[in-house]
Amino acid sequence: MSVFWTAVALVTALAVQTALSLIGPGWARILDPFLLVVVYCGLKGGETHGMLAGAAAGWMQDVHFGGRVLGLAGLTKVLVGFGVGLAGTRFQLTEPGARLLVVVAAVIIDALVLGQLARAFDVVTGSLTLGGLALRAGVNAAIGVPLFALVERRRWRWSGA
Amino acid sequence: MARGLATNKSRLLLAGLVLGHLVAISRQVDIGDGVTLFERWLFALFSPLQGLISGGVDGVGGTWSSYVSLRGVREENRHLRDRLAVTELLLQQRTHQAREAARLRELLQLRAVLPLETLVAEVIARDGVPWFRTVTLDKGADQGVTLSAPVISPNGVVGRVIRLGPDAAVVQLLLDQESGVGVRIERSRVTGVVGGQVDSAGQLTGDLQLKYVPMLADVVEGDLVITSGLDRIYPAGLVVGRVRLVRLGAGLFKEILVAPSARFDKLEEVLVVRTPLPDVSVTETVQ
Image 1 (cartoon, rainbow over the protein chains, first blue to last red):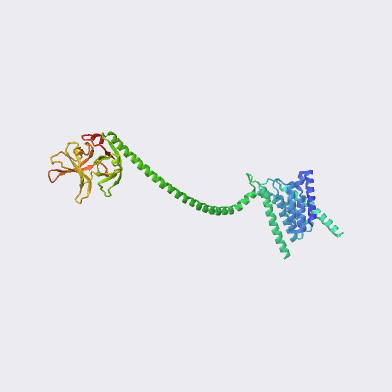
Image 2 (cartoon, each protein chain N blue to C red):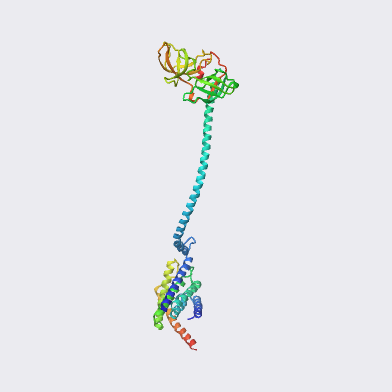
C-alpha cells in the first residue's frame, strides 16, 4: 500500500469521522475509521508502514477530534500500528476470522493504551464501559473486515487490469 | 538477515516515534503555574547537569572572586594600616595636646593665684642620666628670665636658673647636691636648707636632704616643707616637699629626708619667677 493510497485512506477516514460526528456523536465514538486504516496498513505494509500510518492517523484524529492535549491518539495509533504490523509479518492474517480478531484486539489495545496515556498525563477523556468497548470492537470489526476484503478485491482488480 | 535489519530499523523508528510523541504530549500538559510536563521532565533530566555545571562555574567564579577579593582586601588592609598609623599619630598628638593643655591649665591656675610675676617656659632638654640635675628651658634673657630666677611647677619648687642664654635657660634642680634652698617646716616653723641627696656611690637618690635642723627641733615624718625666703632666691611659702624620714644624725643635727613635691621626671612646662618677692606667703594656694 503506497503512501498515496494511505493518504487517500486517511482523508477518507477523516471525512467519515466528520460525517459520523455530524450525524450522531455516539456513532463517532463507536466507529473509528482511522483505526481501521492503521490496522490495514499494518497488515499489508508491516510494522513500519503501520507505525507511520498510525502516527499520521492519530495526529489527524487528535487535531480534528482530540482534546486539549495533542498526541495521545497519535502515540496510541503508533503502538497499534506497530503491533499489528509485527503480527502481520509473523502470522498469516489474511483470513477474515484472523483479521476480525486483529481488529478486535486493535480496538481493545487502542482503548486501553489511550486510557492509560490519558491517565498518565492527567488528561480527562470520555470513559468507555466494557459494553461500550465490546460494541466498539464489534462494530469496527464488522465494518473493517469486509472493508479490508473490498479494498483488496478492488486493488487486485486494478492491478489485474 | 534482511528481516532482522528491517525489524531493528522499525524498532528504532518506534522508539523515535514514541519518544517524539511523549515529548509532544508532555509539552502540552500543564502541571500548574504555566509549567508543562515536558519542561518538568527536561528540568528533572538536565537539572543535575546544570547543578554540576553551576557548581563548577560557581566554584571557579568563587575562587576567582575570592582571589580578587583577597587582592582587594590586601590593598584595603594596606590602606587601612596606613590610615591607622596616621590616626595613631593624630591620637598621640591629640593626647599630647590634651595633656599639655591640662598642664598649662594647672600652670595658669597657679599663675593666677601666685602674687608673683611669672613666665611660662617649656622644658626642651634634660640631663641624660636617670636622675638628671638640670633641665633646659626655651625661655631666656630675651624673654625676661634672670639668673637665679626660681622655677616652680604646680606641684612644687623645681629649682633655679643657673645659666642663661638669649632664648634658653638652664635650671639647676633641687635634686642637685650642689643646690640649696632655704626652707622651713610649715607646722613647727623650724628652718633648714634643702639640697639633693646622694648615696654612698655618689648617685642621686631622688630624695632631698634637709640639713642643719637641730636635734631638738620638732620635725616629724609627713611634715610639709616650704621655702622660707631667707635665701633671697625663692619666695617664701612655696612647697618643696614632705618629710619622709627623720633620724638622729652623727653630729648636732638631725638627718632628715624630704620627698620632693615636684615631679622632676615629668617636667614639661614650668613657671619662671621673674621678680622674686621676699616674705610672700602662698602656702595654701600652692597646696
